[in-house]
Image (tube, rainbow, N blue to C red; front, side, top):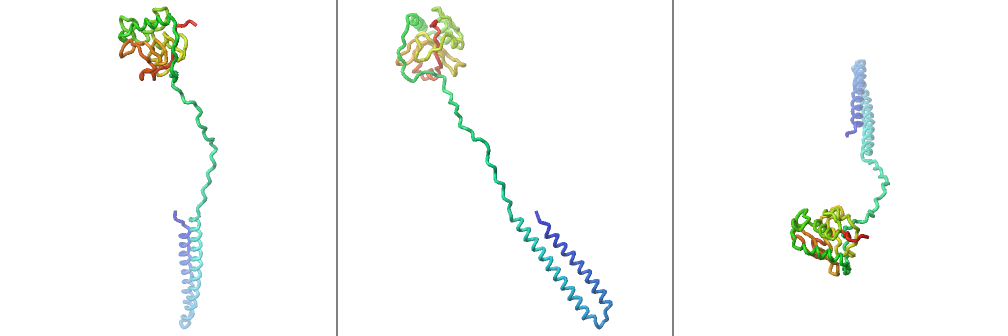
Length: 249
């Protein structure tokens, strides 16, 4: 933005100059009219000397004022106002999260399994279940004639020995009592899936020993089969938990 002070001073200087010229001119003309001819030159020179002395003084005075204003303006423009210092932040730094990362629901122990004891009753159940190896898979199937799905198979086998179990795996997962995987016994049920609320498969324990847990179950690809789920790359990662439906305690 252009500073208007020097322009204003220059304009005033020009106006004053014209006024002085006009007034001195009138005075000179008036005096010349009243001056005899033989004295005109000397009187005229004196008037002109006065006129130029006044004009020189006025010029220097206004020039000094203009230079002073220009100097003040340049200093004002060069002066930079200090920036306000930022206030220290009062925000409390966030503490690192102490939330323990969620662990997978899989409770399979890393140590080798011990050999599980069994009872004649439990052994009869698993022996009966293994008789159906080779029976094809059937969605919602509950009998050997139609074929079995996973929970239909476990429900059918247990029911033959008077153990009531729902044909739905989600309900079977809530029946009986919880048992840790390193303490499962023949006839116990092991559940698979993404979480305890998303059960996708169930199998019946045949035995537990140092090589892992062996189950009999009905799979979609091969029907009823016996398999070591601890050594299966597919089933091992999907193991969730186990339930004991046989014990009455």
